[in-house]
Image (tube, rainbow, N blue to C red; front, side, top):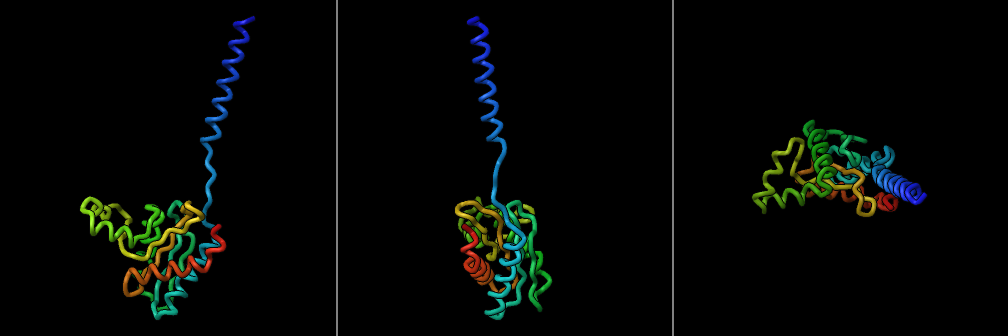
Length: 165
């Protein structure tokens, strides 16, 4: 009888441990909606247009997949790829591309980041966060300087900040 009780206890503990481990295998994550992506792309293009810059804004989700793209009239064709690469780089690294560029310029070990396929270390890529969780990124290309592209992305984020809670 004692042996059966011990085996039952072991089985119960094993099942409990398995259930606990199994629940930690399933993740729950926030992600970018199409509506939010469109708002961010539109607000980025509008912020740059207000300063006389014709840009493209690409918004990606947490996995770096494109959710929205808006290209202003007269934006150069190169701005499509540049904005996507900036958004993808920012979402992947969970950092601004301007900060990454500056880090790569100051740190010889970080200079190799430019060799990662798809990375673009020019200003204009900004992560989109809910709290500390990155749910995507905005990439802007076409203003006369990456710092100006970044300002447009930051203006877009400021416009929707109440939705990112």
